[in-house]
Image (tube, rainbow, N blue to C red; front, side):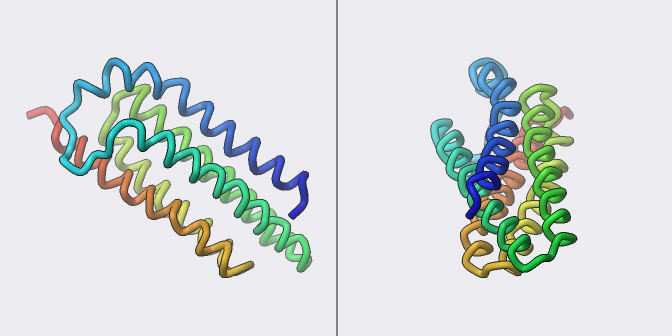
Length: 161
């Protein structure tokens, strides 16, 4: 794995995390505790641990995938993967802003579902390059699917009327 590729995917993942954390922290301290939540919501400390691990996994797996595609000379697939990764990270940060920043639970639930599909797409693209990379990244769409269920359930419990 090239250091330059890993640096790029790490910086991109970290940027998404930072963008999201800007609105998450204040909302977790004020607005989020006022919501009715489903019984399966994990304790608050689980989220930063899970997301840190997932962002690290995404950075490493994406770097390996991008380098693998470069090594076999598939520049079109490499560019497509980089574009898909960028879109995924934008969706990831966007969900946080819609949910925690705008308090739009319905919109956030839709974004979470799209993020899940995007994450599954990244895992499949990685698996085509190296099966182990796809397996390593499988926890990301699994967590996003859980987040979709959690977001949607929270929306349902807090809907008006």
